[in-house]
Image 1 (tube, one colour):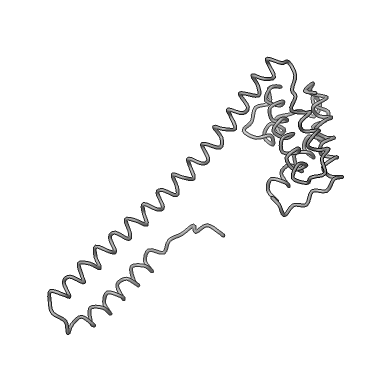
Image 2: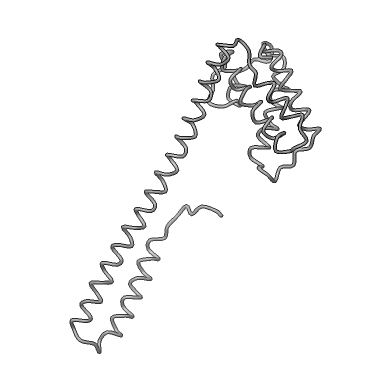
Length: 194
């Protein structure tokens, strides 16, 4: 379901005015106090409706901001925890988990293996001094002379993007998964991460 990016306030006001005008003509045969009561009720109802619509829009915006900040905060905590774990043990055991996921027969595990390998690539690139908010930005900072597997990293990252943006509609076959994992492995070997 698509999101609504607009609100036609003029249309709402015109339709409300037409409704009230039509209702006013129907009330001409009723007592004055009833007509006044109906007018006041309509005006209060419209004001309350507009207030509630504004409140719903505000709540939705705040919810989206909170979800976005919470996602990034959780991701940062995971990266900090992993960095501390790598420093304490001296090795990165994520690669073994990635290989284990890739060796199952489940397509969802294959997807997860590639997504986790890409996260690991971002951490390794960051540790190597490649700044950027995403793996794509970090790879743009890399020099192909210093990093001979840069092209392989881009190809593997493209598979990750296809999975992330395609969702369940993207079909990942075993050959493509094995190729992407091999690309990640070769990049990690060059960077000294595995």
